Image (tube, rainbow, N blue to C red; front, side, top):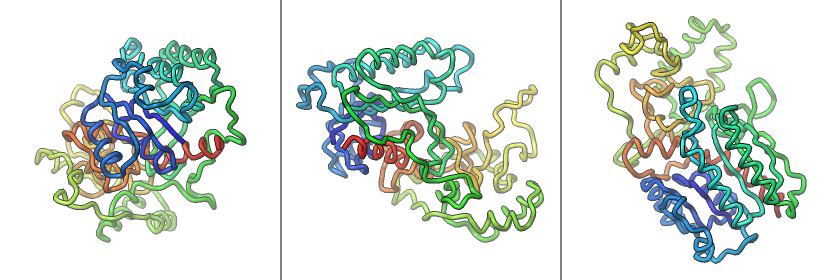
Length: 384
């Protein structure tokens, strides 16, 4: 099967497609560092048959694009894409996102649907796409799909933690199926493979799986916290401790260029050292200057990732503790970019390129590999 990936980023959706047995014949990505990451990892290293277009999608002339790829209307099996979500993000204040020009890229995606007439298209975006203030863009997209002969399933909220991703990451997916195409017995979203703890089914993967097993003293401190701060009974706390699974150690920066973290001020390191396992910034011994006016701020910033729960959503600021609960489980610094990539289920040999900020953006914007693989496999198995 053949696919095209628009707004391809560092290649998360494409890597998922590759692992699902789909050939991605073209990828379009405006960000030059992300396009380089894609080229180096997927094309140069894994030898996927992809032509990478490191260009603004608005400048691509679709008829010429199709000629270059040797593909005609109606031949493509699957069109993928995650139009930039910042315009729909819940972090935008008030109505500041309503007229964000990036919102129009959702409609630009449909220009490719209109020209290519793929059998199936799949769009990924943030839950903010479903907010009332963005319904104009969403309704226009859904209307275009209907007028062009597509049955739309969704938008559907799908959480990555239900599919083997150690991260609580809710995203919206829109699936479009051409009217002359049958996806027999399609289940959408696909059946979950991981579940809330306490059932006889596999439990959600916890953040601990991203990190190597720490010294026993850190486990003992976590057990003590469950008892003294969280009010757990000894048996409950011991059951959680015994259920924790850990991963392989992260390599040194000399062996893995993505195995580095932010350098913090000595004062911030001191504050982190006073935070226990699973701790939050309310355990700091003093108030942060930005909260001195009575503003409590976002509760999770400068917090430690919790061992026993799926990790926080990896955002474009995933390496910066000021942007969320991104402090290492027991070390007194933020997580490394390799840890962040593991939360997104990228393999450790996937090397990101660009500055630290650019790499974090690529990781945070990606579709988790395990989630993407489940979605694409379900589509393609029914399409066959």
